[in-house]
Length: 118
Image 1 (cartoon, rainbow, N blue to C red):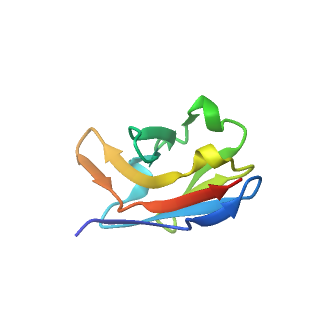
Image 2: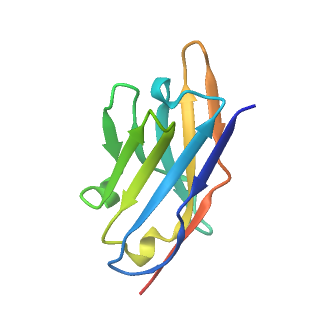
């Protein structure tokens, strides 16, 4: 059974840091594209960062230079290091593991709340 579980969210003051984790079971993360999304109240879900199986990364402009996505294939876990947090980073953060060629999968975690106070 496939499980994707995020952790590491919480309440932090502006300028602080958090590291989110995305632990997978039933899927080998090394063959997946891993993405972190976020959804703030009243807003659409937004792609924040992604890393492919070959290690290529991409970020939305608003987090470039502050967030870093990484993966530890040995632990079957991905991370999102978030530094210099701003109140506008407040959202529920979701981890997505996807693969478009065989074996195809598209799995989401339940989300973890990040709240940045001003």
